[in-house]
Image (cartoon, rainbow over all chains, first blue to last red; front, top):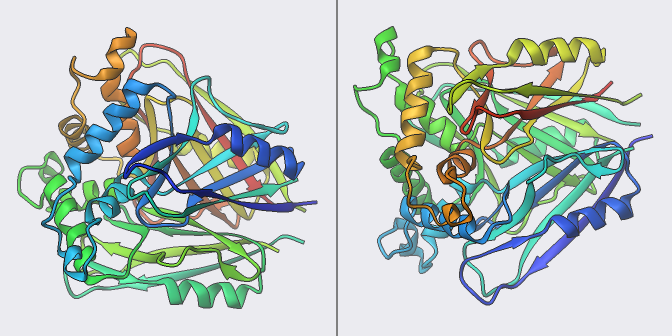
Length: 138
Length: 138
Length: 138
């Protein structure tokens, strides 16, 4: 009997860009869902944020930030800024990082390798942002 | 009772690169599916196109195109062109953009934040291309 | 009646970077699952590998490798290397390539366009790595 369980995470980061490990939170949602087998969609609800799976290592997180800012730099020259916005880079970083992951669930657990952690990547913080976590399975 | 509902979109853009908002079309497919809770896979069926979620703002769309062409430029020097093709850049743009998204469905609606829109990104148009939209849920 | 079927692929590539076509293997897993309608999650279990869908053309595969190494170069200067690791580039390549795809299943087959193939992208090989393949459907 397939069930669905949906929760929403809310963030309001003090800095413009931050990388938050949300693995534990997703595990708690999975536990509340009582789903043992299936998939979890973890997806940013904003277009200036990302969700990704990688390592919980501070140096690497800075390397990721460096790369994203090298490929999609913070700066004044985006066409998007003609609308009055200043966050063109954040939209592009969201594109490169991707805004969602699907996490496999087996035997009631995130079916992850040894180093996989789920991160929320904020690229335009200092405002209220949301992530949907939807568990689908049985 | 989980159901599946699959439809295919067809595109044939006049320009080599175009970005088309398909949110309304996906909503109509969801409506026809009568699924209230679940997920929608929206996935390009070609390897020179992408599907992404971001803002319906013309300046930003041009910024996205600029970035993708900066990171994977249109040009003659790809090894892939030894096969007679001229679209190496389109394959690489598809990689960076990603070719699919999974859209959460809650209460019969796309469970999106305020600015999220689904785009089909054509990187090698002027020919018939398809996208699969598969709704899974109940 | 929705079913779930999970298998794990193991790789140990002789080279640091390799791109392996796993389409046939995923088709065999789908066949064993006896699922006719649904989705397959194909997801790397390591954070220095990727899974993507694109063309089975050797020149293009080299173009993809060139692009990823241009955007996230192999080199000594990553902060992550202060931990004693030397694979910072592999983490970043995994981010850009993305570590997973969702494959639609219709009528017992991968519902793909004519040129779509599933690739495992190894960015830090010469060790045992795994990919999860989870089929969900009926």
